[in-house]
Every structure is written in C-alpha cells, then in structure tokens.
Length: 111
Length: 117
Image (tube, rainbow over the protein chains, first blue to last red):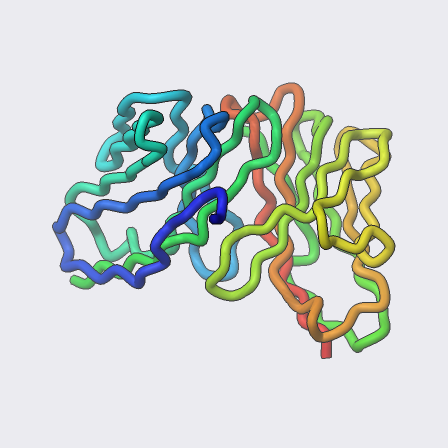
C-alpha cells in the first residue's frame, strides 16, 4: 500500500460546480497536510496548509483533515476554468521533513 | 515572500553528457533542500534531501553517483545528472526550507524539464 493515495481522475466539471478532491494515507504520524496546484510543466503552488485535524477555509477553497479516518479533502466552490490544473495532496510527519505527495488529480472546468 | 529560482527551466542534452540544475533561494537561507522528480501524470517522487554543508541523503533506489547533489552554501544547491540517458528524462523540482522562508516551511522551484536524446 502506498503511503498516500489519490485518484488521478481526470475530473471534469462545469463552471460554477463544487469540486471535491480527496486523499487517503496510511501513516498515522502525518501531521502536516497541504494541497498544491500544478499547471503543466510548472512547479507546484501551495493552496492550503493544515496542521493536524480540522477545517481551514481560504476564499473558494476549504481543506478538511480527518486524522481518525486518515482522509483529507479539498473543496473548491464556484469552480472556474482557471482552476483547471492538477491538484496534489502532500503531507509530512514532522515539521521540516520531506513532503510525501499523492499522485495528483487532474481537474478540468469547462465554461 | 520566499522565492526559489530554479534554472534551467528546460534542457535538452545528448545521451552520455552531464547536466547541472541549480536552485537558488533569493531572499532566505535554505538550510535544507529536497530534490524531486516527476514523470508525466505521476506524483513528485523524493530523490534526496540535503542539508547545507553535509552530504545528501538519498532515497532508496536513487543512484547517488548518478545524481550528484551539492549544497555548499545556504543559498545554492545543485543537482547534476551525470552520464544522462533517455530514461533520465523527467521533470526535476527542488524544494527549500530554511530560516526566513515561507510560513509553512517549503518553497518550491519552478522545475526543470530534462530531455535526453
């Protein structure tokens, strides 16, 4: 079993839809959880950062962490064509250690 | 905010030659650098971790003699792909962590697309 599992998609939605992206993980030591957005042939861009369990909201984005289920989610409200990209979840156990990434989910938002 | 400049963004080289990729932290001191590679439609796979002034720690399966990492200063780390072969063609990304860096601790470079022909 891989440490971090993420459905690669692709996921296609119409503009304005609510998008739900998810990752599961096996290492209970993970405490730091992040979501990145990556456009083709570019480096990943941080969207959300969460420590331990709970929810965090930033504009149209909401990140949720459920450590008891080893499950994290990213919700995108009012999706826009500009949100079309690959979304990667990442996590680590201790601050400053290397991030372990999911495979990434490719999202396409059509206008 | 914290910025890591990665160069070159794209490079094409002949099989058997060596290629050097540089990552520079522009406004903070990168005490730790992580090097990743990413195949098309695949995740970022950690190759190695380097701390300034120390030898890099490589992940299992990564050839340290092929992927030479130097982190001699707090603002510069380099990855040299030696005797490159077509199977080394990939997207290489660095990620820096250090003092004065981003709030959450990791700043990524923009990536280098290496094509070996």
